[in-house]
Image (cartoon, rainbow, N blue to C red; front, side, top):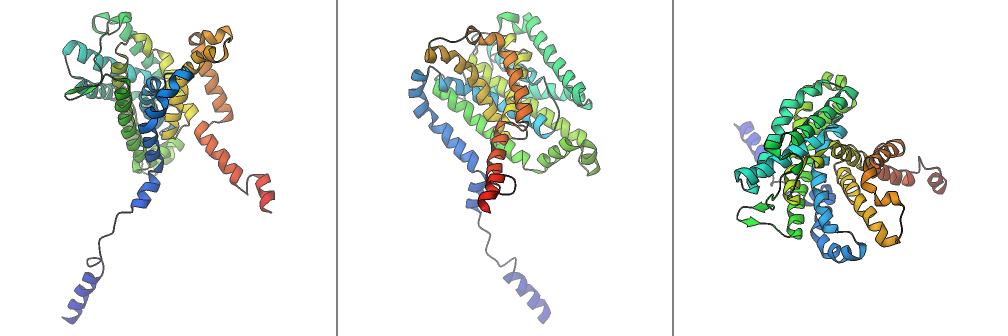
Length: 369
């Protein structure tokens, strides 16, 4: 009886009687410092970007809307390529499917925009489920299969004129909106896109740090070793592929309502190459690298267009940049893979670590000695 009372008293004074643990707010802030800092940067951007747009001859806020859209689809592609190690050259197909789904539902069926974009996500996911068997292929076989997938979708959008309008495209697409409110201003569209993008970035950051993220990294290193460790390789690849397709559909739906006009030429194979370039140059296995890559590739044509206003005279090929865009993207990919195979963001981080390390940097070692 005495032992029983003593045991219960110990419990009351131990785990059951101890005060509840308070949430570690400082730890949460440290872990999410980059996300919070980026969110503040985006929220205040119009205050300084609008006055700078005219002297720089670059519509910063207008372009940043597209950066947010491409960041969403690039993050999805990075999950598939950078983390799971599955090469895809057809991500533009899901982007186009999402754009046309939302555009057609809102213009021809009469769906509201806030319902058309979720439908775009669902349709892109459905195509992802149907096309997931290509993941049985590996290496360049998988790359060729996804490339063919992108070409097939492009030809379908161009030739099925009864549905897509062909080269005439879809016009008069409604503005972005939420229930009972249509968003028509550039600043409103900017905030709309980036609120969605930041939510996606936050969720993807949590995903790559979770058990699923560790499974993706494992199969990227070696599918045989991952399977031996108990990772359901086939299921993980399919889930990441479908998630990547869903993010492509979401980005495509937003793109259609930002542009308000789409045609098949916007979703050619060049788009898929641009998305791969965003991932490669920003850094594979880096969620935030996808944002950097999307920003760099999206602003590059705007910078080229502004050069004549800055310099007065430029070479003729710069004035015809759009004719050489595919070649330039290819050169960017080659240079990045040769000199910074981990991408610019991770390469810069590694460079800073190298300069600070007294074990690797010989100049730093001499200073320490």
